[in-house]
Length: 404
Picture: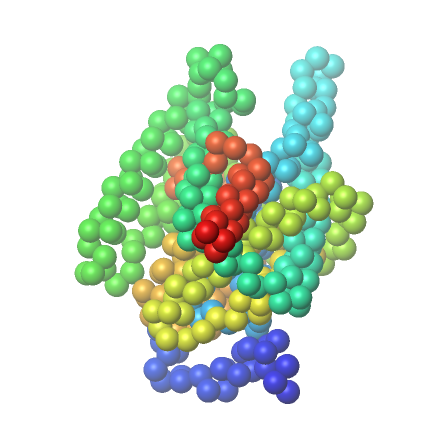
């Protein structure tokens, strides 16, 4: 019985759930986080080089699964910028757009986006499943202690550096060119650039207002979602794609897909990357989880967190999700808006489910670069090399401190 309670922590706390004290806060928090999940899911799918709907899937399935297996009451799991960039570097290197060129009228060539996206979704789903296998295995082997060697400065330095990488990798979308060497700057799509600048300025101003009036606001103004709604409406009304050549998201299919078995033939090519993603994703989650646990007087089980993340990734991979972690911004909102348990996570996942089933198709006219300008993230080095160097340096400092 104790093993069952440890493996399924919700069996321990759900029967003792104080409905009168916590339910309203969890519902309000769940809606707030769900509203954040929508623009982040769309944007992080783009960072990963995937169709936008996969971001919505990744904001639904893993979040719902974490309710059953997670031990942190305040962590908001789901798409995370650093993980998306790591995945994006893989999709770009293993399945570049150049592999899907087709001739048009015998002379011009164009990318078969449907074929490319299908291949990338298959690849990333396989990476996600393999990432989950690594995390579950490490959790069962009681390897949660490895977080000792992933110090706060290491994690923060890695994620902050990742920010730069995300920003640079998306310049091609901001300028509306592909790729982005200096020789392409004269080809900048002015409409795309102007839209990006307007979105950036608006988001920056509102973010500053959110910070300045945090004590007076019941919840942060969801400027990302507001920007997406307004820009989508303008794009549809003015027909920005036809008039100014601005790239838009395109069709977002509604409804859930049946599970698909991953293509195990990719395992050999992505095993190292999947392990790196597993470690980074866990490091972020356990770091945030311990901060909230210390503040609110409860404990998180580091090994169970590995298992919870692993199962969320493993099962999510069968439903076209990409690997997930925890987001600091969403977790802070989940806590500050009254969230007391992962019931808030279930509510947020239901918000995304409604979006997938009924609302997602409304975002087909969303200008792509509007996703990008709401997020910044990471490293001058390749992410995997950076992680290895960071961990190695962290281990060396621990060894020197203990031996000298």
